[in-house]
Length: 299
Image (tube, rainbow, N blue to C red; front, side):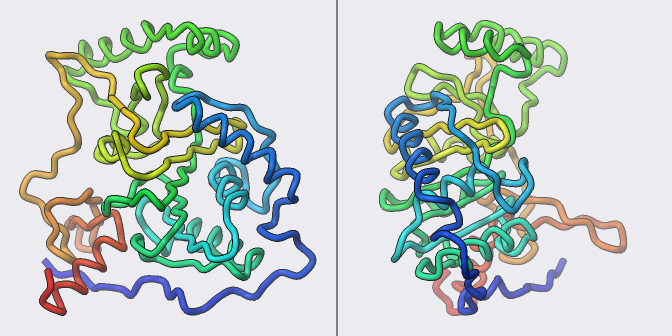
């Protein structure tokens, strides 16, 4: 099985700056308000902090929460990486990266995980472990983990305040009874710092262990729901599970990436024109880095 390797997005070309806009698009008062919410979120790991979500030139539900966090944090000397489901060259990632380039000319953008100071992502955590000097910003469509068991906002806030997560446990138990195992694939609920249950964005189960006792700061932004929450460095993130039905990550058997041959990364299925299916690394930078290392004999 062969696959054509396409070059990743070039980081040498900066988009033309937009005149007449405030630095990083948002006004300074909005940035300060977002940073205050971020400080509270870091102080209370997993707690959903309300914030005044602003209007952006992208639709709500397409990353406005994560983008507002990124725009409130970036400054001269920062290097920003934007990925969508692991890809650097998806439409959403390219447009968000272009907005950063055009409104913050002294901020560099990159497709390399290792050189970024801020990584904004949707649906994935980079395969490469992040350092303590890096910040991971996750776009979140639905921040409330209890929404599937309780529709009333006032009741979910009460349940969080009293640490009453019994209905969540019942929902997981019902999943096992009906399907014989825990089937929730993305946004799997986890207990943060032994106190608040959170949904870690729609990342796959594969990525959840990377948040546990990590070196980096993880920030979660939901623009449509107007919520911000965080997982500080060296904070426990424990997936909810039962002793006889432990939490497990996705298994790909003997499948390997058709481009780089990796068997240790999260793989996605890519259909071919002839009806066959091949698998590729979801994290494009991880894949290209492996290919480069193989070509130079350093793999």
